[in-house]
Length: 112
Length: 113
Image (cartoon, rainbow over all chains, first blue to last red; front, side):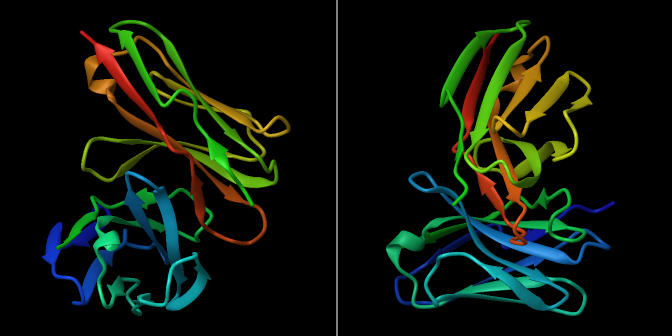
């Protein structure tokens, strides 16, 4: 059974650019959540999607957005990148959102 | 607002010892609690999930307990091995319909051969 797949694994972007990250959840899982991990702030919740609808959103600026497709794959987008957006972005999938969460390997974003 | 704390932030023990990692949370109205491990630069690996109605869960050398009323969970690792070296994170899903994980800051565990 395939796990959670995140692409790309590494990205280097310039300030002001935008970036799109992708997450393919475990087959049969309908909930996809995104987290940002930094050394200073730890793991922080970005948003959660279930059946193509954003159910929950964390305390991040509007530059962070996401979507989920009918096959449950999800993308997150960050526009007008800032140096502080450099982080490991992790995607988690679960059957319903409150069941066991499984994480991907993450996308390491570096903004220069 | 739910807050999750893990103490100590770092722990070093000799190989073969049994050890306990601690996790505390401020709001006892949780749906479940999950323990993860994270290797440097990698994603999170789920270790154990405890539902709010359960007291403990076991998987191999790992045993996690939950005391919801006191807002505490412990992860017990028996007969530690160098491969257990990693950062261990606990996270809770709160009851109030917000299906997000609130994470502690983790305990970095080093097993000394």
